[in-house]
Length: 205
Image (cartoon, rainbow, N blue to C red):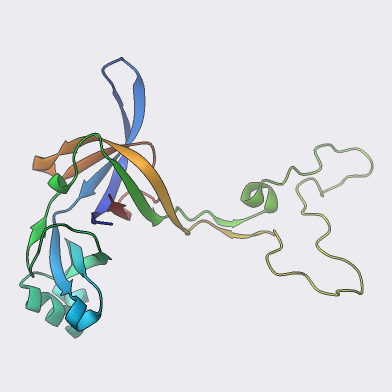
């Protein structure tokens, strides 16, 4: 699937032609620079590697500097590979937000917001005890029993328990492109996308 790397700017809402208020997300999509071209002969598959968002040379490794120099560009903070481009690109080419058109549908993936260590009610939707009678003291949001007795004498893997929540890779599919603002490299899609503000996202057709 062809696409671009972007940065989530934030959420807003716009009115459609029928006067309906539509929640939407604004993404800074591109321009992305081609930093490597994968070929069948050398790599065994066809794809292009894109870089987005300039990084300082001070924070880059020598490998990163050499890789960027070969493409004739600056070091990039975010790099990702894409397949399915119809056009032929070479090193140093720029792909802009005009790769997308209004009305089409895209998939957006990113890392969801981290929510820290959470209990089972927030993390897994447990209902809790729900009332404070029959001797309940401080067990209202407790997970309850997690296993049997002397057999199997262990807790099974995958048991729903308290733990760190969020920071998972999430893909939201079939988001309609509402606007393409080419002069500002902005893409406005219907609905929400994963990640905090200024988080990197992958947009795929």
